[in-house]
Length: 63
Image 1 (cartoon, rainbow, N blue to C red):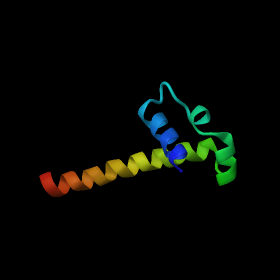
Image 2 (cartoon, rainbow, N blue to C red; image 1 turned 30 degrees about the vertical axis):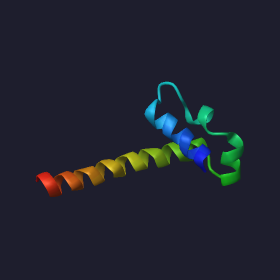
Image 3 (cartoon, one colour; image 1 turned 60 degrees about the horizontal axis):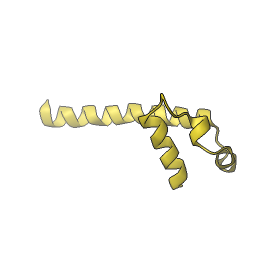
């Protein structure tokens, strides 16, 4: 699990250097029955939801 999370974090922090295909082992993706496209979609969704949460917090405390 930590291997997957570390790979996702690297891509999220430095997309110009790392890619999902290079950072996430294909064997792990096969075992989890996911593709690197699935990982990218999930990461984009998480980023959007993080922004939404911060908007709610900002509105509550500063709105």
